[in-house]
Length: 282
Image (tube, rainbow, N blue to C red; front, side, top):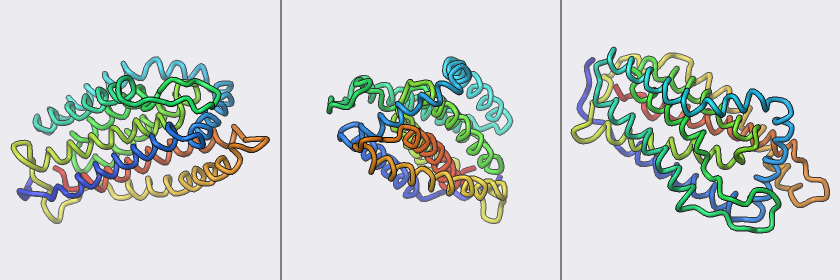
């Protein structure tokens, strides 16, 4: 494959800082403020609807996520690496995935705290979600080692896998929506770090040459068409929940729908951004 020697690191630096900013804002609002905790808890309480309808499936999925993610991730990244003969990318991909998993556990267990602001419910810190991080990190590894022609499909499939795992943690009462979205952001940040590594220094693989097809036509457009309506629903549900969070009859079902659609929108948005950011990576 013909490549040119350099690619600007600005896109990956900007992506990493944007991810850190979103993660920080998510934590400050949903964990450190009364309004954020109340809204997040309403979505968590509204998950009773999900538990009644999908709990058996969600429980099985959650139990299988760590093993399935690791096994599938190892197999797919190994096969793709052998086919493409690109061991450097494999090392970086595994490093990014491991970094995401370890940093999530450090953040949740040792660094971030959840203050007691009087909101009824589980008061321990669960931000970010470990299960979602494992699923998304495995998807990230496959995404990074994929070829430019298949990377869009890897992003779509990986986003779907991480979204299902994240929604399952909410439906099964393990995590709040902010926990899941935060986990997706942690993985996204490490993905940007991987992109920076792969375009600079001894790990650099250059960029795809001009004039080549660098992603499957329509994959990013498909994600965009899925993202827009889901994001609109999520924003509408957020606004309704915001105005009714401290009312006499707060709607847990609307909050739950907002939480689910927010998770879906976050997963699709990160996947779409990944396609654009890594379009020129060989």
